[in-house]
Image (cartoon, rainbow, N blue to C red):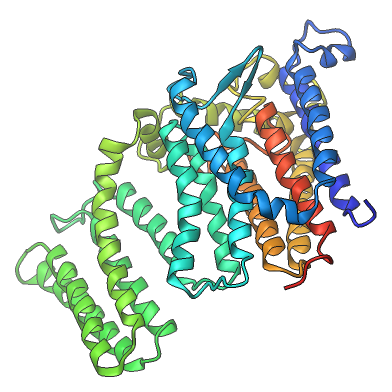
Length: 481
C-alpha cells in the first residue's frame, strides 16, 4: 500500500463527509431532536452512511487487485455489464417511465452506474494495446463502438441523462491525439441546435425568413471556412470560399431588401453546395484529402440541423422538450418543468454570503425543492452554507479533478493514462452538468453530484471507478510500454 496516493484518498473522504452532511441537511426535519437520528438505518442519511462504509470496504478490496488483473478482465466485465443492462430493461419496474432499477430486497440497484466503470476499463484496455493507433480509422471506430454501446442500452432504459455522461469519454480520445475536428463538430452542433431552436419563430423585420434557420446556415459556412484555414494547407481554398460566401451573403441580402423580395435562404443553401463541390474539386487538384472531411462536415451539419425540429417534436419526451424550451427562454413554466430550478435558485439565493447555518435552511426543510437530497443537493449547500460554503465545495471539487488529471499524466503507459482521463472526464461531466442544472444553466437531465447526491448505486459506482484508478496508479512502475 506504500505507493497508494493517500492525498487523493483524503480528498475522497473529505468529499464523502461533506456530501453526507449535505444529505443530513436536506433530509432533516424540524421534529428530529437528536444528531443520532441521522444514523438510523431507516433515514436517508443513515442509509447513505451505510453505503459510504460499504464503498470503503469495496475500495480496500479493489486496492488489493493487481493492475494486470483489471486489464485481463476488462472484456469480461464489459460484456457482463452490457448483458445486465439489457436484462434490466425487461425485469426492472417502471419508475417514472424509467426501467433502470433492479430491486433486491429492501435495496435498489441501478446497473447503469456500474456500466461507467466497465466502459472506462474496456476503453482504457483497448487504447493500451501495443498496436493501437489513434490515427487508424478502425481503432477509432472500435473506441466509438465501446462508448456508444452502453449509451444505447441506457437510452433503452429511458435514462437519457445517464447515457449522456458517456460522451465525456471522447475527451480521452482527444487527449490521445484524435484530431480536434470531432470536438469542433460537437461544439458547432450545440450552437446549431440552440440558435436554430431559440430563434426558429423569430423573423427578419423586412423579410419573410426566420432568423434561426438562416443564422445556422451562416454559422455552417463560417465553421467550414475556418476549418479550411486552420486544418488545410491551401490559402487559396480559404480565400475563394471566404470571398464567395461573404459576397454572396451580403449581395443577396441587399437585393432582397432594396430590389426584389425573395427567400434569401435559397442563396445560403447554394453557397453551402458551392463550398462542398469546390472542396471536392480541390482534392483532385492538390491531393488535399482533408477537404473531403470538410465537405462531409457541411453535408452532415445541414442534415443535423434539419433533423433538430423533428427530434424536438417527435423524439424527445414532452417533459424533456419543455425543459429545453424553459432553458432557452421560449417558455416560462414555474409551476411545471421550471419549478425545480426556480425553487433551487430561491434556496441558493436565500443563503446569502454565509448561509443560514447547518440544518437551518427553510426552503429545504419545508420541502419546496423536489429531489433536494439527490439531483438538487447543491441547493441545500447554497442555502445552509451560503456563497462561502458553495465556493468552498466547488473549489474542493476542482482540486479533486485536477488531482486526477495529475495522476493520469504521470502514468507511464496508455492504459493508465486513458483510464485516468476517463475518470476525470466522468467526474467533471457530473460536476459541471449537475451544478449547471441546479442554477439553471443547462437542462435538468437528472444526474447526481459525485459523493454528494443521495444514492448507494452512484456512490459505490464512483468509488469503484476511483479506487481502481488508485490501484492502477500504484502499479505504474510495474508495466512499461
